[in-house]
Image 1 (tube, rainbow over the protein chains, first blue to last red):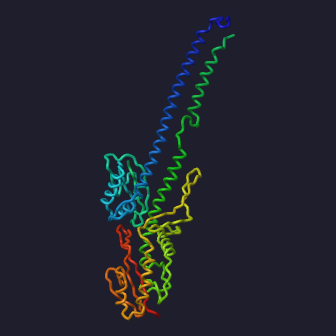
Image 2: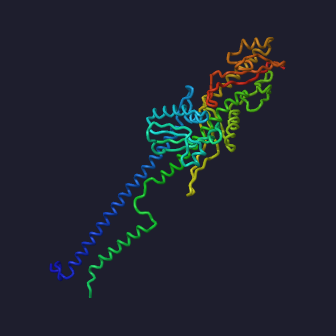
Image 3: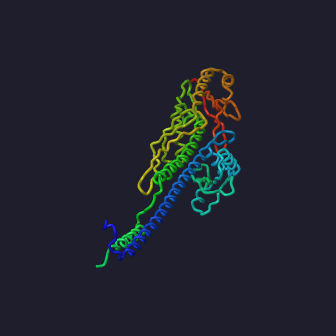
Length: 164
Length: 251
């Protein structure tokens, strides 16, 4: 019982303040570590979700170009319409096809077609055609290259981009 | 002797500070890693890229398929001049009583590859038909890789819908045999043919029908597709018309 009591009180306050400051420092370090890791975990989860959204955007672009479309009241593939629009320089044809598709699938955003040379070399390439149904196009969802066998010069290979 | 009871707290503090410095300066990444990085990279750089290439590939195959339809129709279904002969650029389906066998599947396969190789010299497909669809198989591979040495390999086979059935050749050949049998001995060949032939069989030209025959009884026909098939060509749907010759001479 006697050993439970402090025999000498010399240095007890020093030791007590040491203990107090130690606990305080550990608490603060623990708090900052928690905040850093928790924030980091949140950021990393956001990164993963962003990549998943990007992947979905690429799939939407593939769905668009492979979707059925109509030409002269006969069913073709959207790729046919896009390539024909490029070869005939027919923006109206492109816009009508895109408008129909975007409305049917209730999409918001836009699509644009570029020749591959301008797309690959210029910082802000000018599109051959573009369609949108929003004020701000949003981020690029995906881009795909298509061979245009009937195209001339730079338009032998075109790029189709989807925004949303 | 000094009391060393409290020094342990100072040493713990120093160790903690040193640990923090190590964490900051160490090249090793601490903290939470994004989930699914490998899987998303795989999908993004392999699967999606592969699908994009296949989409382009399918379009080329569709283009080659459409060209095959017209190319074969102009040549009566034969890739090269048949044994039955060719007169004025028109391939003949028979020589006298002997009909040349038209191997539709073989001719489609050969002509398709001829058309496709204009766009890809190294391509080689085994093409088969399924109704209005063409199926292409190949031994070639499309290889996608990354800097880590990992590869994703896919097969650029295709299945395309031409909206046209090559089986029309069988129907037309049956009709051709019937016409040759019925009119081979006719005194007035034109009169006989006009009585037996169906309306979509035209003499010489589909636009401007005009009977003409060689002295030995050879007659060229332009046959409009009985199924009214029209295939996309340069942005327009063009009716399929066959150029065929029949030999009514019995030598």
